[in-house]
Image 1 (cartoon, rainbow, N blue to C red):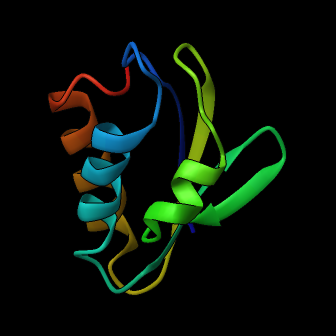
Image 2: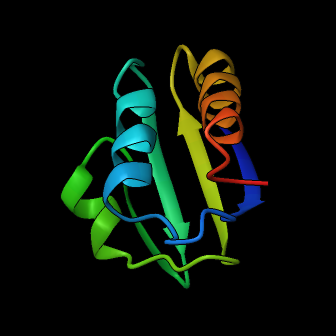
Image 3: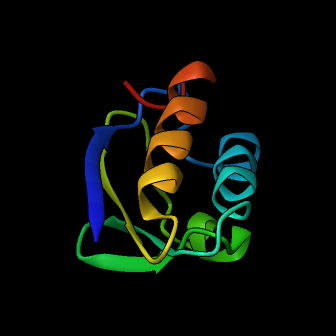
Length: 88
């Protein structure tokens, strides 16, 4: 299992557009990918799951990947979220 802990810097937090970017990035992989915030963990491939966390800006989140392509998944998701200025 691979995981990273990052800070959300998008001004609106992880809602609507940024959540869609995150879900699309995660959905490209076979691994189980979860996102955790304040003790709750949801499937990062579910837009409703990600949005249900209500992650505001300046929040610390943990993204974890477990599966055959976990290395590529965690690297790609982190790269996409940084490129879109969603995480720092």
